[in-house]
Length: 111
Length: 113
Image 1 (spheres, rainbow over the protein chains, first blue to last red):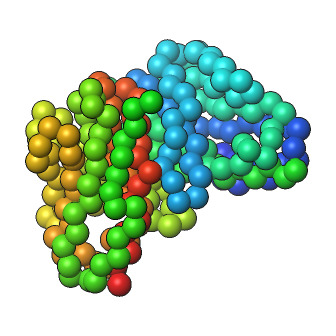
Image 2: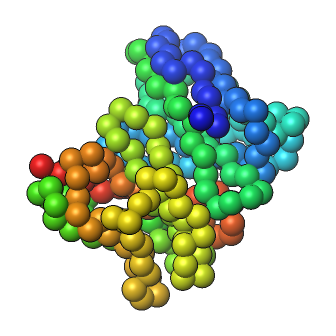
Image 3: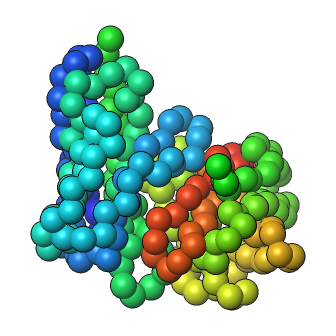
């Protein structure tokens, strides 16, 4: 059973376009992280959201946590080739001690 | 900036051999994790560790796997008798508190031949 589903799985866009990546679940999470991973490297933490409805901005990246803390989105404005990578959401629940990773969205920004 | 470090970056081993993957978590972190990622697949949880004991483990983490914190800084993952399907990137992570943000190392690429 996949706890966190991300969509789209693959995304290829032109430089300058906007995009949104979604991370959905039927489960409630106490916190949710977004990571970016480059080939052959470890996931790099971008942001953590903990409060339902929370919105965080990181330069051209906007992260939102759903009101019910079951879903999240990542919006990138004016994408650049340097944004290319695998974007992963990961959620933590009140029970247990692990982070559940999403299926990932592979983004390619074409110059 | 503090970071999680892993060694070696690459490890090639013969099937049936034992391997130990090493990690140095961020110094003031209390929770430690091992994840793995088979090429082209999603990041899978193996085990979490707190207060010198395993706090949670997945079905993947069977009797062939063990973790240890041999001293105050290192956190190791041992695979006793490697199988071909153990080939993957293994990531160590640490977090300061339970289920707060986790920081990942660069990974060890394990290839079993």
